[in-house]
Structure formats: C-alpha cells, structure tokens
Length: 72
Image (tube, rainbow, N blue to C red):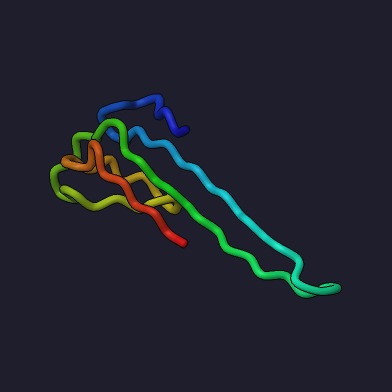
C-alpha cells in the first residue's frame, strides 16, 4: 500500500503481486505472475488526468480513484 505524505500531490494506491509455479520435471518449471494495482484516492494534478505511472512513478493525477489494472 502506498500512502503518500502529501495527498494533494500524489495518488493513494494499493499493489498486490502473486507468482505461481509448478515443477513439471526435474528442473523445468511452468510459472505465471499476476500484478494488481488499485487506486484508492486521486491526487490533484489535472495536467495528467486519468494517467498514472503504475509502480514506476506517482503522478498524482485526477480521475484515477477506483481504477484497477491487472497485469500477467
């Protein structure tokens, strides 16, 4: 969970990551990974409205509250 000190300049988000693997034979694995991003509160920067930087950068954009992104 990312809870910024300055709630105006940054968005509030939670992040969840899971990896699942299964060994098929000696030393050979099949795996998958899921990453889920959820924005709980938007920032106050209208210049980047609706656009966030996932886990790279927090832009503090408006209009991202409630957005979810799942990557696999």
